[in-house]
Amino acid sequence: MDFAIKTGAPEKQRSGCLVVGVFEKRQLSPQAASVDKAAKGYLRDLLKAGDMDGRAGQQLLLPRVPGITADRVLLVGMGKEKELTERVYRQAVLTMHATLANAGAKDAICYLPQAQIKNRDLAWRIRDAAQTLELLDYRFEACKSKKNGQKSALRKVGFSAASKSEAAKAEQAAAQGQALGNGMNLARELGNLPGNICTPSYLAEQAHGLGERHPSVEITVLDEPAMEELGMGSLLSVSHGSQEPARLIVMHYRGAGEREQPYALVGKGITFDTGGISLKPGAAMDEMKFDMCGAASVFGTLEAVAQLELPINLVGVIPAVENMPDGKATKPGDIVTSMSGQTIEILNTDAEGRLVLCDALSYVERYKPRSVVDIATLTGACIIALGNHMHGLMGNNNALVSELLAAGKAADDPAWELPLGPEYDELLKSNFADMANIGGRAAGTITAGCFLARFTKKLRWAHLDIAGTAWKSGEQKGATGRPVPLLTHYLIEQAGKRKS
Image (cartoon, rainbow, N blue to C red):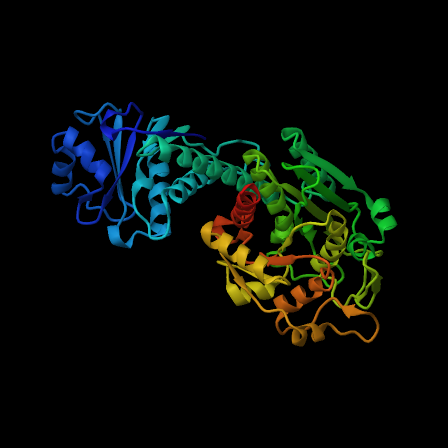
């Protein structure tokens, strides 16, 4: 979808549709009131007649409104003005999109971002609307014989700015929203693909494709012999049971000087997780194709950062592996040696994500990154703790954790900090190796974080557990594209600091 910024009175705009808000008790927004004045009370007369009262989710599409240059006017209910929240605002954007999808209007000018939301400025409201509209245009059709997912007729949306100085910030916000939406949609597409298509080798091919789209991104892919030479025994132990060879994918975005230290993202890329010898229950095992959503979020964030041409350097590292049970598969009780030299007793082969991440975290040390964030659908315990709303967040640097929490709040992609401490770390003790790969049922999300912390002592590091937020089940089954907004917003903020 294309986005533009418009200035000037709504009644004078030439467009397929003007979109204005109406609050409860038939209260016209200032932009709707301006249209009504030009139309000599036409809108108020309709509202008084009971056609609409402004409740959230309501809409009224009006063709050929007298005195208005635009072909149509769409009134969108926004609930109580003083109680307008991010959720209600987003519902209004959804209502606009649903109404205009088949209305014939190929372009529209949307004045909904002019509504006031507490602690959300115009830039946020425009960015969120653009991001939402991009997400609404996504359809998964890669595996369907008939491409019947009807896309909206709406192809261009303009947002309003009161002045030329405000327009510059609005343009930047719309560009960010579009990049975020595109990045999330890439993450969704990769996550939604089945495991027989989206293999480690396929992910490597997609990385090369990203590099071709963006010359600022350099791609390196390590095969199993190269990883074996580096001593990645932990990562390779997961791929033993699969006929699909593992890959370590490195995507290096260069938006700053050669000497500028990069930021780093490490995404868990288990393209399908059976649990290995510690086999998972059969119910809903198909959803284990989503176990590479951490990797998908790294792809999506790189896509957004490259589109925005942020003035930073960024390294995305993806350990891509399939976890399968066969005669060569790693067994419970096996001991492996990680790239760091630390040994690991594998008590449960279904705790494989941390086994691939720990070697990837050791690998990323060579870039001397400013910060490292790993992203993983790591533990079912995180879903029990936080449900499907917030990511679990842990780290060894308070400032970094605070920056990520703030980024999540700003992007409306929230995380919640969980503790790391020696009392939890002790649960990883092993009689036979330096550590076990699980710590028991208690505090499973935290002990997983403690495991990774043992490989990040030289790094300014944080860990996002996205097991509850990376995809939805049921009728809306599919990847969400989270936490691309949180990660991208964090990097936008870091870019702003580097620039200043």
